[in-house]
Length: 255
Image (tube, rainbow, N blue to C red; front, side, top):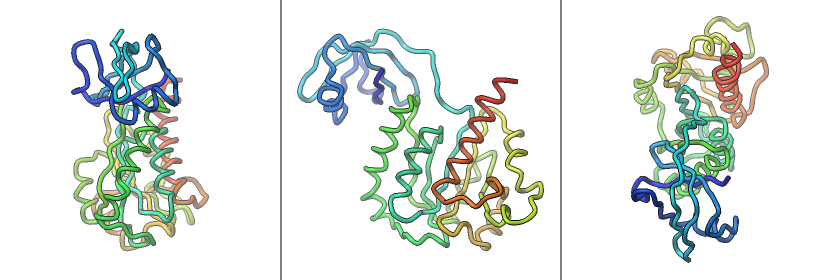
């Protein structure tokens, strides 16, 4: 059943007014008609099974049949601070990271970022980024759309980290040599608890610089290695999210 995200303001009693681009998707792409059912997610994470009542050119009215007792969210909140990569890699990370459960994304202006995004350049990209997040959330049946932060410098990122319970950064130098306790991703996973807020910093092409690594460590971040192989920047966050998901949602469930 197709899922759409709505604001609480669109809900009146037991009816929902759907507007904007979702109207085109419902009427032209899905070719839904009155009587068809869809799922509506409110911005506070609730989901309802709804039946289409009226279809108009600029709006679709649906009736709430029942609220669903479901959640597809990770039991922890993972924020990915991604070193700004080249090309359209950030869009790929947003899409796949959303599917894998990330709660927030922060584009990070790293020392080795070739692409440079100032506030003006980011604002031009932000609408497309948010559309990707919304569509990926609908496709993967998320209860919430991940947040998207403006571009942060390292100083601001370290300040942001003060509200997190677990602070990690992937450091390729840890993958090259002997892995000590500081780089054991498995050890980090085993210590996670429901409700933890995790900040994961991923470098751009070329990884985190030594200077950045020293500043992050001094600010309470733990360096981890993501396997013995060196991953591309667009793969690293997905590896970590997959590990977190498997450990907390599959492995712990089996146990």
